[in-house]
Length: 104
Image (cartoon, rainbow, N blue to C red; front, side, top):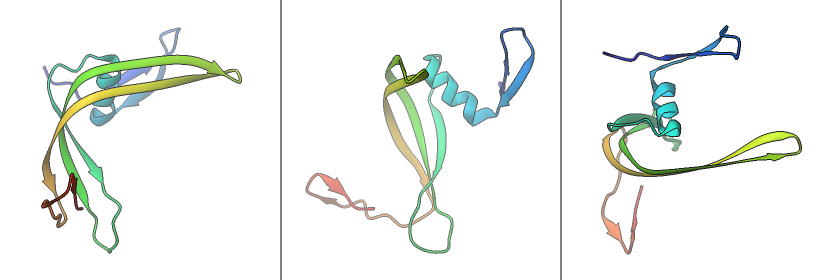
């Protein structure tokens, strides 16, 4: 079976909106349903005219969500610990260590 997205319904079962595949993977992270690693491609803001992206393979380790109300609005504090590996980058990056930091 291949999941391509999720449809969200209201409390009466009527259609509200749909989530694409990347949004569905993020929802799985929040719901703690993620069984396998997922790959995310993230745009990186750097100087220059070319578009720069980095792809990361993420495997969640621990998730904690705290809920609260402030000023009549719901507040969600989300802490997710993950192990990640860079799988692709579309820009030059100096990976030589300088102390405990890596240069980008």
